[in-house]
Amino acid sequence: MSRSAFGKVVDTQVSRRTILQASGLGALGFALAACSGPATGEELTNTQTDDVDWSTITPATEITWWSNHPGSSKDAEDELIRQFTEKTGIAVKLVTAGASYDEVAQRFQAASGTDSLPDLVIASDVWWFRYFLNGQIMPLDGVFTHLKVDTSDYNPTLYGDYEFDGAHYAAPYARSTPLFYYNKDVFKKAGLPDRGPRTWDEFEQWAPKLQEVLPADGAPLGLGVGTSWSAWWMLNVLWGRGATYSNEWDITLNTPEAIAAGEWVRELYHDKKFASIGNDTNADFAAGYFGCLIGSTGSLTGLLDAATFNLGASFLPEGPEGPGVPTGGTGLAIPSSRSPEQQLAAAMFLDFLTNAESTAFFSKSTGYMPVRTSATTGPTMTALYDEIPLYRVAIDQLAITRSQDWVRVFVPSGDQILSEGIEQIVLKNTPAQQAWESITPRLDRAFTENVEPYL
Image (cartoon, rainbow, N blue to C red; front, side, top):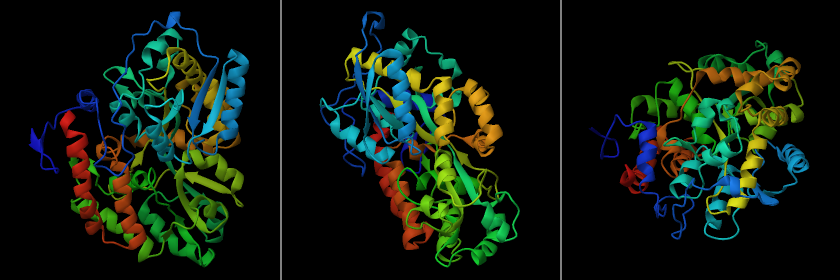
């Protein structure tokens, strides 16, 4: 046992699995009123069960799916729905429930306890745990066993992200890592190698050369802000400089390494002018205002279509202490309050959406990683790698990924609070130490009120 940065005594030997098990003890009535994220309804109860005899259930003939169409994937989703309906006769109503994972989550939270819930919903890396704690999503293992879903073919890390006590509460769908994109034409004009910088030090050496050949209102690097984004890419900077948001439950934003990482970001934007958020970071990059971009793998297809230049992609640059690549993206979950008939139909659709052929099609259409191991070496992806080698970069980068810091993904509103601290640094030129100190009490409160009681 040790005293955490939250000032509370915690078991430092507890595993992620144990934490999730313990957290489930307090799921009834779990509320987020103290946090800045969407509040949960007080009427919610933990109805997560897996005791349905699925062999006696007839699937519903129509279901509703809430998506934000990650990676501009609506056309791909419509095509997958068409194929599924043709195969099964089950109609799927696709609803644009928000423009981002957070907007979908807010709408899902608001609809809880009503008849307006969907039968399948986006469950991102920073939202599925909250859904679980509130009893809002069902375990998939029983219905997947009934449907003979080959879960062993899911990438084990991606599928394991949604596990609690041996049960899985979502399946991976649009999974990604950040990538470093660059404008090959601008690099050539600047006299730079046709590759991404291997380190951030190398990028800083190249940035002045990029500035010379970019528009006056452009910048060497486009790097946007916002929830579900800022705190994700910042992990690359922190980890690469030997820093973290937290060490398990211990907040580590007061360490010299974390402060130095934040100061490096502040200087990148404000002192050196090497980075900018632009108006629409991806669109500005595609239009040639930025020489480089950190974007999701899910942006690859859209960038290939929109870019007015030859597009390059590479691993994220390393820091002085080495690489730092987080995984992210979203899975799909089935609400626990829907009828067994709706849940079975939704599970059938979820199986279809994430089978080897469908995930390869979705990956080809968007740039997100295939979630099944067999798909990465199947004919669709192999042909795609030969045609457009950029699609292989994200698959290869998986070898150096690591799990995200707990305060971002397990503490309710942790991602949003961290993002607001980063925005102070990026948008207001706030010194990193001051920004980190301003958000630490809020992270402390989110932990002590919404996590610690369930440990």
